[in-house]
Image 1 (cartoon, rainbow, N blue to C red):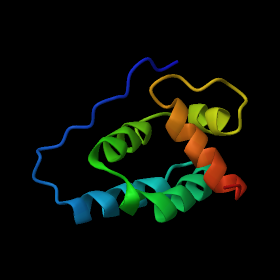
Image 2: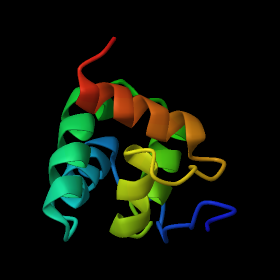
Image 3: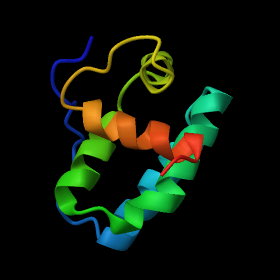
Image 4: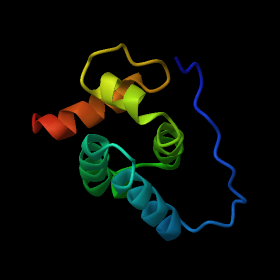
Length: 98
């Protein structure tokens, strides 16, 4: 289980536009089709509205294993901190509940 988000190497030169494009692409091309669908939908609906801290956390989430992510999103396993609130938001997005 993950205790802390994994850091992604970033030179700091990435523009916000490029960061959002990269994160949307990584959301769509996961390896497990279910996670492709779930994260692509979340990314399309939410990334542009997120602040820097939220984007940093989502970027760290993208480094996690798909099998773990799927079990967290579907409630099969408890979500580790610091991803609890983010996974809850992703679950709400895919359920269509507001």
